[in-house]
Every structure is written in C-alpha cells, then in structure tokens.
Amino acid sequence: METYAKQNLQLLSHTLLERIQPAVVFNDKITIEQILNEYTNDHSIRTIHIYDSEHHLIAQSFKLSSQTSILEGWFDHWFLNEPVHLTIYHHEQNVGELTLFGSSEKILQFLKMIMVGLAIAMLFIVCALWWSVNLTYRQIMQAIYPLTNIAQIVSEQKAYNLRFPYNRIKEFQDLNTVFNELLEEIQIWDNQLQKENRKLSFQAHHDQLTLLPNRHYFYQILLDMFEDKGFDNKSALLFIDNNNFKAINDQFGHLAGDEVLKEMANRLQTRLRHQDFIARLGGDEFAVILHSISHADHLISIAENLLESCKEPLHLNGQTIYFSFSVGIALSQFASSPEDFIMQADQAMYKAKNSNEHWFIYKPEN
Image (cartoon, rainbow, N blue to C red; front, top):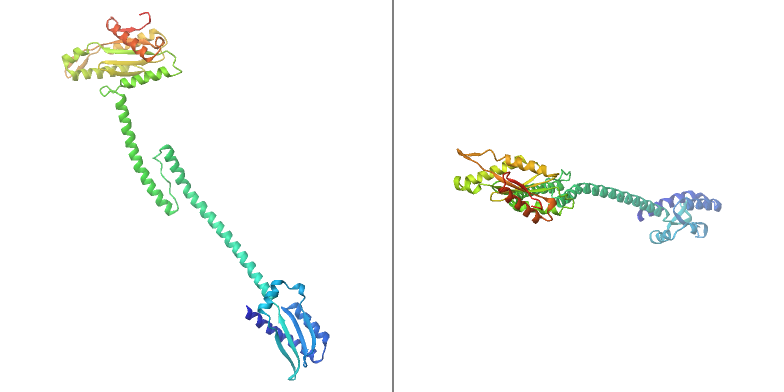
C-alpha cells in the first residue's frame, strides 16, 4: 500500500509539473497558485512548493490543517514523510523546482472502506452463524423432545409399550433403535412379571380346588365393608355347610368329596347374582355376602333357591352321589363388627342344620 501511494504521488507530481511549466517560465504566479490550490484541494497532497532556478520560493499551497485528522497526521509521518522533488526544465534549461508532500487521505478513505466492508461482512457472518446455530438448535430440540417426552412417560407411567418415533438425525435414530429394543425387552419382562404377580395374587386369594375366593379374601371383603362410610346396613351374610360331607368321603373317597365341593361351588354360583360374593372358607364350609337386601322375604327366597340347587345328585364315574347343605343367615343391621357378623351367621347355620327348612335367619331375640 505504501509503494502504491508513492507511485501514485510520482505520477501526480509529473502531471502537475507539465501543467505549471509554462506558468513558471513566464513567472505567472497567479496561474501557478490557482493550479497548486486546485491540486491541493482535489488530490491527496499535503504541501506543494515551487522554486525558481535559484531556489527562491515562487508559490506554495497547503492543505488546511482543519481538514487533517490526527490519524492522517500519523500516516503522513510514517509513510509519506519524504517529499517528491522534480526539476522544471524548459528547452533543457533549469527554470525551477517542484517539491510535493503527499497526503494519506485517500489511503485512510480506502482503509475505512475496507473496515466498513469487513464490519458488514462480519455482521453478515455473525447473522448467518446465529441463524445457522438457531436452526440447528431447533432441529436438535425437535429431535430431542420425543426422546425426553417418551422417556418421562415411561418413567412415570411404566408405559413400556411406547416406542421412540423415527428421527431424521442418524445419531438420534441409532439411539432410538437401541432404546426401542431395550423397551421391547423390558415390556416382555414386565408382562411376564405382571402375569406371575396376577397368578400369585390369585393363588393367595383363591381356593385351589373350587377357584372361589378363600378365607383370607373373604375376611378382607368383610372388613372393607364395615369400614366403608357409605355402608347402608342392607347386607346379609350366609354360612353354608354340607350336611353329609363326612359320609360322602367315607363312602366314595376323598376324590369324590372334592368333586362334590366343586359341584357345590358351581351350583351355588349359578344361583347367585353377579354382585354377590361367594367364598370357600375351608373344608365343606362356604360363605356368601349379599347386598341390597330390603326385607327378610327376599332372604328366604334366596336361601330356598340355593337349597333347590342340591336336589339333583352328582353322577361321578357311574356312581350317584346325593348331597345337601344348610344355610345360616345373619343381617348386617344386627352386627356392630365383622366378628359379630360372623358369629351370628355361624349360630344361624347350626340352627339351620336342626331345622326342617335347612335355613335359618339370625335375630337378636333368638
């Protein structure tokens, strides 16, 4: 840049020399000053001096100091401190001398343009980078959101059946594939675990022979019923006991006795409503919890209907087995606790065994 400025100054000096030569020859100071002022104002020139052949100053022109910045002064001092000296000839005779100091004004203007251009370019690059980063961030967040959302649902709800969707970003898709395979394995394991838990829960709460709820399940239902604040005391508890179960075991064997118990369970279930609860307490004892019992006649009808189910014998391996049972009935309105309820039903059942009807309803006066 310094070389370019000096070459440009040399060219400008020769051009000026050609213009002022006639005026110097004729000593036309007015024309010389006009030309010098024109060049000083229009070109990057700091000072111009014109001397005659005896080195006497003829004319000079200065750039106004108010038009010179501090930075320009520094550049002039470091890069254009040496003037250009040219001899003015006329018919090969020395008629004067031109001394010209250049100005860095144009250089600074050029540098300012470069700086502005660089600033604009940097601003454009920053904007482009911001846009690119923002776009990439949105794309990454759009890719990550399904991962975090499904992972949170799986963690909170144990929804192992969910799968991560397809992702356009290859790295995330590879991660999705691994997670989906892992979720599939967890789902299979969880299904097996739930199946085993249901099986164990069923075995813990049901009788293995008749598949009816067992004594533990029965006590829990009864306890929940009395703890329920909305309990309306319109329920009944039936204790059912086989009348000749020992004789059946002695005569036909224990396997036949088991078949009789299974048949009793099936026949009782078919005569009950879907909202009624039946359980096997153990041995040949069964219990039934009835709800929405409005009056005693309703209980009598239910008891007689249950007793009707044992009139037909059981045909087993060519043998005919007759069996019967008795029904003891207790009303929740007379019981203050599950223990009272069970005791009253048990007392009613023993009285039912000694009655002709084979059913008996407990009442306090009894």
